[in-house]
Image (cartoon, rainbow, N blue to C red; front, side, top):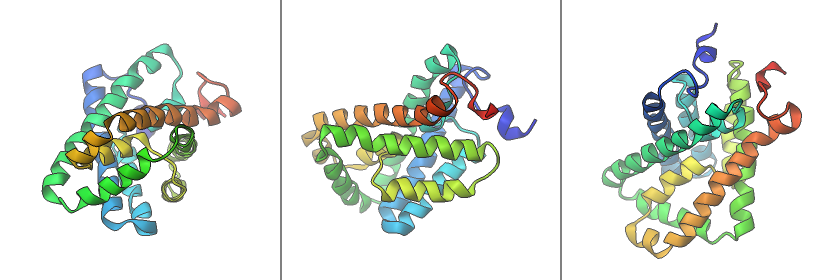
Length: 219
């Protein structure tokens, strides 16, 4: 069995503690992508962001937006919050490191956060759906060892303005204390919407095409 298939889900094969640690590192990889996006911006930053997802896939790390579309059992569903929490923790600590290493990125993050909280509630909820659809599609291709769609999919969701909840955990953590404190309630609402919207988007392809809680890889 190919290695990527043997460990493609941490849900039932690994203890919660191991799954959580892997989830933390998945958050770090996404934060690396977020760091280069804040540093470069534009099309180049969107393309280079893909390295974060390539790292997640290569090390077979559990990422919230990579697992949400492939829930098959109640045990899988119970593990998803631990994955999300681990991803957020990894993003938070990497942001602390980057604040010290590259403080010039704080202002860039501030501007991005202000744009996020200026969205209305429907935008906050709907934009993450597009990202979720793309993420599930990317994972399906990656499980068949086809990675070109990843190199297109990541820039597509970034340039479309779609929202990735783990990347946003990094961006919010990178913002200055004043910006975060002054917009705390809006940030919390926006983030909850991002998590919900990502989940809806992630399950849509398999729900409509194959049926939820079924093995979508047997299509």
